[in-house]
Every structure is written in structure tokens, then in C-alpha cells.
Amino acid sequence: MSDASVSAALRSTAKLVVVEAPAGCGKTYQGASYARDIADSLGSGRLLILTHTHAACSVFHSRTLGVGSHVEIRTIDSLVSDLTDAYHQGIGLPPDTAVWARRNKDGYDQLAVRAAALIKRFPAIAASLARRYPIVICDEHQDSSAERHAIVMALGEHGANLRMFADPMQRVFTPKVYTCGCPPLDWSALIGAADVFDQLDDPHRWSAGCKRLGQWIFEARKALKQGGVIDLTQPRPPSVSIVFADNEAHGSLEYRPCHKHRGPIDAFEATAASLLILARYDKTTHCFRSTFNRRIPLWEGHVRSSLDRFVSALTDHDGDHEKIALAVTEFIKGTTTGFSASQYGDPFLQDVADRCGKIRRGGRAFVQQLARFVVEEPNHIGAAKVLVSIASDRHFSSIHRDYFREFHEGAKLGLFPSAEQGLREIARHRTYVRPQPPPKAISTIHKAKGLECQNVIVMPCSAEQFKDDQISRCLLYVAISRPSHRLMLVIPRNAPSPLFRL
Image (cartoon, rainbow, N blue to C red; front, side, top):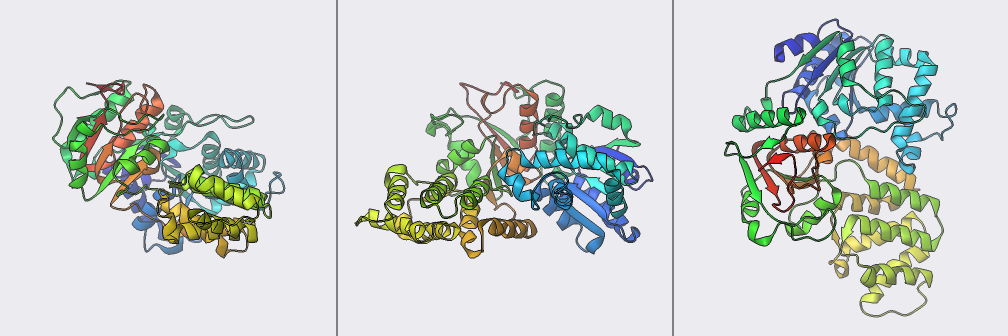
């Protein structure tokens, strides 16, 4: 088991190669190197790299520059969308299935269920895809739902060579089981079905950083995988810092380290040129914005949940003044801090309901001007004008745009003929631009998956964030394996995570 044996397995004639790839062991390097070497030999076919995140697409794109059209990199959900678009009438969906998915709960999962059933019923579809993509590299395959896995395996059954990289300890999503769906992905069964199974075990991520940190993380992974705990009573490398800091916040899932305990945290942040601050939940990371005086932005990733809901509401209620105004307030509340109901939200909604019939003075006059945009244009254009005004008018400086990119994408909707068309164009641009986190960022662990940074703070390492269950074990491992140089764990003494021995 080594880099050499994995490299040889990838380049072999084996139909199904499965590689277990812990974080930082060169999985992307191996996959991209293989893609570069093999691409020119495919003739009219293409090598397909399927990922689960746009961030992973970006990394593979940067590692395969110069191979041109011989390599196609995309998320597996985009492949599913293309499949369901092509056969939408037969499966009872509208033409643009990605729009349908955004507007329905677990929409992309539901698309995968229908796509898997379609391929099973009409195997010629899988055969056609296998001819187009004779080699398929699957990245982070442990995150595949049963149906996404079935789609990939169908390509293998019809001639495509499959190269799967996965790590069961990085499975951070709990797959849902659907009626008439496929059997869940069984990691042991997949290994048993593989023509070749191998493992990467050289911690490359830490070769230019702190090698002792890499060794410590490998030991932590082993303990978590075996159902044990990370023993913090044993000697650890100087690059692993432990800070005990109780919580001063009072809301559920919120965390603000006690003032008298936060000195080491502030010092760590001040000396880090490259930093990720990670927590499990969105609500926790949102609380961190004020903890660090809004100096450190949130990493928003590719998903725009508030924007998706905003566009759906604007489309459904086009022409309805009150409901457009309500959609605007919900979007602003979802992407900013400081948009209070008493100062902004309620007066705005009231003025829209009154069609701005009353004369307002002082601060209320500026809020009424926002309402007037919706009164005059009760659609996505009027809604976008509200957002543009909030971003540019000094009278709204107390409204802080925590989800900066998402807010401004909402403001751009007014440039398009419809909100749905605007969302499609904005999402397409975002996909091809492939944004990266700033040097310092606050992020959920889910959004940081696949990222690497020199320094990482994981906080709070509490029982609320990391219970003693498998999904928490995986999330904790993903979090601690992001840094290449230094790691800080912030633990509240009154409710520490049971995954640590203190």
C-alpha cells in the first residue's frame, strides 16, 4: 500500500479500482495525475471526474490544466440534472429539473432517485454514457447516496472503467432512504466487488508543514474510526493547542468564548496569516462574526439556500406587493445582521401594505423609500433595488451583510428578465469562476470539506457540537485534518465533547 501501488492500480486494466484515501494523503494528486496521463489516449471519449462539491471541481480543474476537452469535471448532481432534463417528460418533471430541485425539499436527492430508476429501466442510456465516458473517476465517493452510487455503477456495468476514491471517515452526510430507491452504499461490499482495492497512507499535506501534526491526526483518525476517543492527556505536538473556554452566549448552538479565557484564541488568530475557524452549525459560525468584531468573513461556499428561497418566492408571487415585500425581508434577515423588525422590517412591510400613502420623516423616510421600490415594481426588479439601496446607502450602515456574496447575488437579480433566469446565470458564473476562501475565514465543517489551510481553530468542541455518534466522529476528523501547520481545539469545561479524553 503506497503511492506507487495506487498509481499502478489506477493505470491498470482493472474495471473497478477502489482507493481508501484519508485526508491529506494525495488523493487529488493521484486522480489528477492519472487524468493527465490517460486523457490523450481516449480518442473521441472523455475522462469524467465526478465530485460532490464545486470546491472539489475547482481543485481538480487547477490540477488538470492543459488537457483541454479530454477531461470533463463536474458534480454528480449536474450529471443527474442533465439526465433528468433530457428525459423530463417521461419522468414527469418540467424541462429545467435543476429549478425543480431547488424548489423542492431534498430536490436533488429526488432527481437522483428518478435518474437511477430511468437508467435501470432503460440500460441503453447507461451504455451511451459509458461510451462517451470510458473512464470515470469518482471523488469522495463515500458521500454518494444509494441512487448516485447506482448511477455510477451502471456506467461500470456497461463498459466504463471506474476509479473510486473514498474515505468512510469523511462521510459527513447521513444518506436518506427513499421509497422505490436503491439499496444504501455498503463500503465493505464495494471493497469486495473491486477488482483492486488499495489505500493511500502517506500524509503529504504535512510534508511541507508540521509532520508531527500529520502523525497526530492519523492517530486521532484511528481512534475515532475504532470507536474510541482522542486522548488529550497524552503528549501531543506543540502544533496542537488546547484552550478551555466556557460559553458566554445563551442561544441554542451559539458560542462565544468567555472573555477571561479567550486570550490564547485571539493570539492564535492574530499570528495566523492563513486561518479557518470551524464549527458544525451555521448558527454557531454566524455567532463568530461578532466574536471577532466582523473582521473575519464567513466562507459561503457554493450553496445559496436563502437565495434559492428568495427566487422561488419572487417567482411565485410576482405582482403581489405584500408577498414580494415579505420575501425581501426574509432574504435580508437570512443574509444580514442588524435588520431588526422594529427599526426596519415592520415599517417596511407596513409602508408596502399602505402603498406608501403616509408621509414619513427621519429614518422612517429612508425605510419608506425602500418600500416604494416594491410598490412601484412588485417583482424581482423592485426587490433587487431594495438590496442595492441597503448596500450603498449610509443610512443602512447598521445592517451588516454577513453573507456578502449571497446578498449581492440577490441584488443582481434585477439585471435579468426574470428571477429564475438570473439565478441560473449567476449560479453558472459562480461555477466557472470557482471562488476560493479568503486568507482568513469562518466556516462550517461541511463547507470546509476539501479545503486546506495552514492554521485551524475548531470551536467549540462541545457535547452539543460533537456527540458520541458516527456522524460527529466523521465531522470532527474532517475538521482537525484541515490544517497543515497548527491546530487549536477550544473546549468548554462545563460541557466538553465525549470524543475527547481530558
